[in-house]
Length: 166
Image (tube, rainbow, N blue to C red; front, side, top):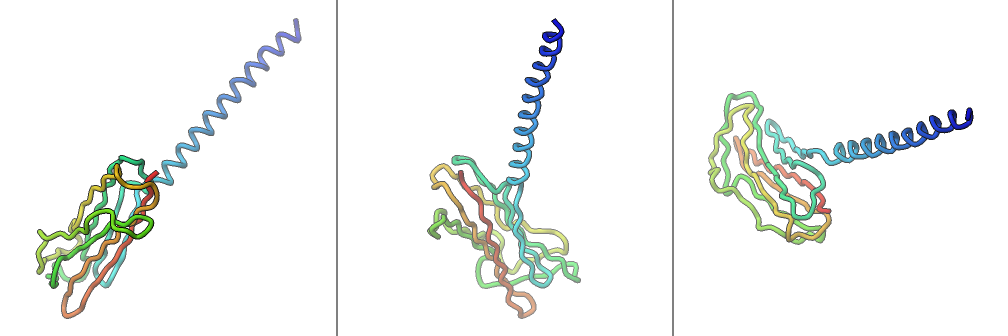
C-alpha cells in the first residue's frame, strides 16, 4: 500500500513533468523561428541620403505575397533639396537563384525629376508586391538602384535584399 501511494504521485509527476518540458521546448523553438524570420532592412548611405529597402520577413511560403518597400531619405543641412536626373529616380529587378529575371524591371515614372526632398521626410519610391505562387523555391534577390545628381555630383545608391521561398 505504501509503495502504491508513493508510485502513483511519482508516476503522475514524471508524466506531467515531461509534457511540460516538451511544450516549453516547442514554444521556445517557435519563438526562435519568429525572431529569425522578422523584418529585414537593407540600407545604404551616401553623403546626406539614405536609401532603404524593407521586407516583412526573410522567409516566405510558396503562394504568399511578399511586400517590399523602398524609400529615400534626405537628412542634410538644408531644409530641402532639389535632385535632378536623366531618367527614373529608381529602378529595380527581381532575380532567382540563377540570376534570371523573374519579374519585370520596375521604374517609378510618377516621381519626375527634378524632385524636391524635404529634410527628414522619407519618400516612398517603390512598393512592390511579389506573388510567389509561380516562383521556384529558393532564394530571390531584389536589386534596386536610385540615381540622381545634386550640385553637380552624381549619386548612385544600390541595395540588394534577399529572401527565401520555402
